[in-house]
Length: 90
Image (cartoon, rainbow, N blue to C red; front, side, top):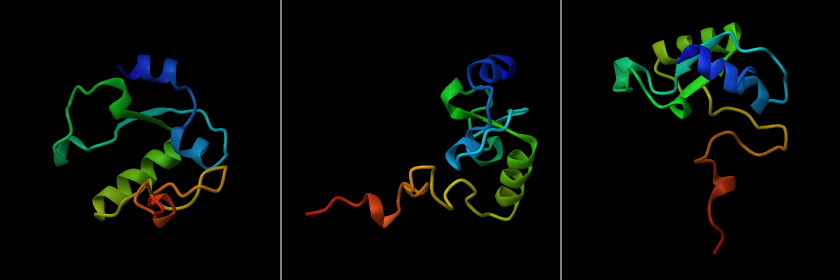
């Protein structure tokens, strides 16, 4: 699964959100197995990450923090899908 994911997504998905180009070296469960994640998930439930992003994500998970929701993508849109920017306007 790891090789297949890296072949499909060879660049770090976290870095790409921030406009950086880094090769991915790790495949990470989006939902950790220890928190109910599937040990053998579908490929879209895995993330291709560079070593730096993988280490940061693991550290944030150990501290109980959400890693991938801070900041904006290359278009200036918030990474957090719950950000007020995405609320429907009435």
